[in-house]
Image (cartoon, rainbow, N blue to C red; front, top):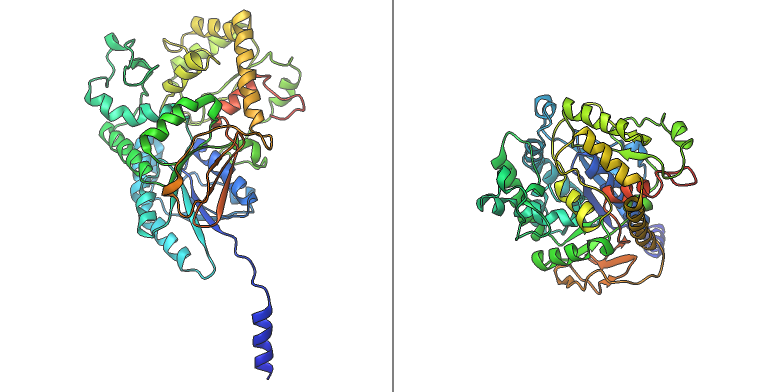
Length: 443
């Protein structure tokens, strides 16, 4: 009798709802970790249980994100592998070394009772994750952390190499790329690596495995990169989502791999709004001693107050010539230093950015783009991202394109990906360019 009563109570008690589970896997570099954790924060707020898989190298601090589970996996990287910071070599090794540990982890997760893995979201460079997802018959969504405009040039590099554009010859540097307008030969990415063949193999694998995925997320806005996003969707024939601005939706929890120096804030608070130029070369790109000196003298000779972020241990890696071309010649939100870093040219460029009619017009364009990004934060504003065919996704009832939300169903649980917006670099730049710092003292 007692057993029967106990059994009846168990049957009548409501079962606790199991949150659909997402596994996110960022590439272990600052500019890739930040948007992935910001995306995770948005998805967690929409009812998903989040597990962050990460390498031992450049691992994020779990204590800053207590709402997530963190799962370290072995990356097989030695001190020698990371000492010289040959990025292409590291990318290649991560793809090779992490495949077995990641497969083992996913296998264990799928065997857990009550776990419901909706899909995995991984960095585009981690192309091996597509094969692992296919083995387990689960969906993979790709996160691209760079601009949509940079996708085609990188994807086309092997073809451009075959056509003789690479390595770039001085005599053809100004030649327009008919295949990739508005770029010129000199705008092609310049990658420093000891193994160029490995680089082109990596690009080919990344492009092929992205096409095999169930969709691509860009931290960008449709109003800024509409043509690039439309072309990408036409070429790769899978859903493409412009979402964000991711840093606006996440908390102020720090995902920085370096200790942040805030000693400049007191000085910055004393400067007039819009009077300071912010200088940063990102988390990977760097300069040699001569370029450092030229930049310093150029800033000083401009006689414009500046705030310059210099990372410890900076090394030469990738540059972002494609982005520079779009910022200066397409979006017209900045200037490109065409002939390298030279103090007089730097000083002139800074004055053009900060003083006079050209500077005023540039700031007006910046404010328009910033307002478009801010509008993406508002509820209920409809717009058009793309009319996607979501047939590649499991059980998609609809795909709604909002000027604030892209919605799609994935294996019955739904993912709400909030807001189109600027990719990480440009969104930060716009905030700074429109006044360096917000009036309330926040960045």
